[in-house]
Length: 358
Image 1 (spheres, rainbow, N blue to C red):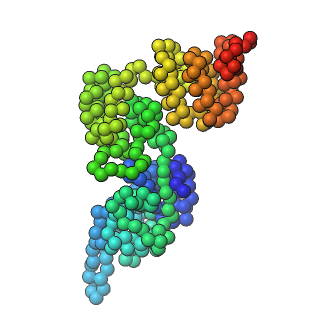
Image 2: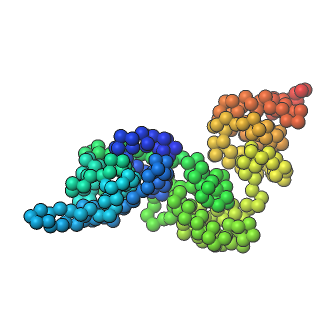
Image 3: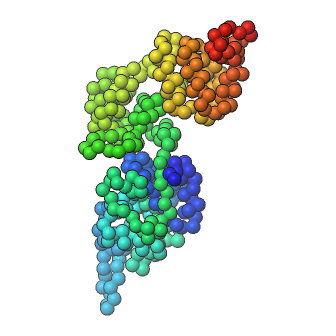
């Protein structure tokens, strides 16, 4: 069973406390490396990272030194550091390493040493692979039961909320709003066609950096930069996501976000909305699963005001979406009164077609 990043960050320190090696398995570009660094920061440890896929046997065990009749091995600098101070030793792409390197890692995870050089007692071992249930989509080597038995294995499948929470401090607001309202474009989760570019969490981060450096997402430059946003989007996240992002940026000034309605109560922003516009916003609320958590009193009041402003067919659609979420939200909206108008009376009117004297 896969865990999200929030769960992993909560659980990993307990595994680290008993110095057991941790292996993260999951799709490419989901942020496995980032969550290792996040966990290390929480533990107050620096990260020493090596890509096992690029290592030779000599890179792992070090160089031989003859001392009289005895041959010893001087460890490489990164392993010397891990033996002499507490670090998080992060071995990425282990399932792409050569069999010789993986045999060396076998000893490392089993006995916390290589060629007689012992890790510092507080050094932790982390690794990441693309194998597991997704392995057939990648050119990786299978990890046999004896090899896996040396690891504490976490299959990771981060949620959209994991990315959105991270992205609040790390990506441009335009990109954040786009993903929040178009969550299906965050990443591709199905099978991959050869030679086709797909979006991933990593590729959105890279596109964000490129667009931000060029200034293409700034308010004064966004519209004239639409062709460049599209071309760069195709290169980083693929055609479908690029088209959606370009169209989103073209209309960004007229965007009404879920946050504007629920958190800020800017109902006037929807004054010129037609039925299709309102329906699209309700669908975004459903896709974002905003009603799966209990709303605050202020959010309920704002939702009530928006509900009363809706055409009847869209109001019923919102009522249905609300009913599929947290029950308390339905109860709270039913009890809500907006400027003296009980929402419950409007609900009855919608359901029965008859006005209710309040």
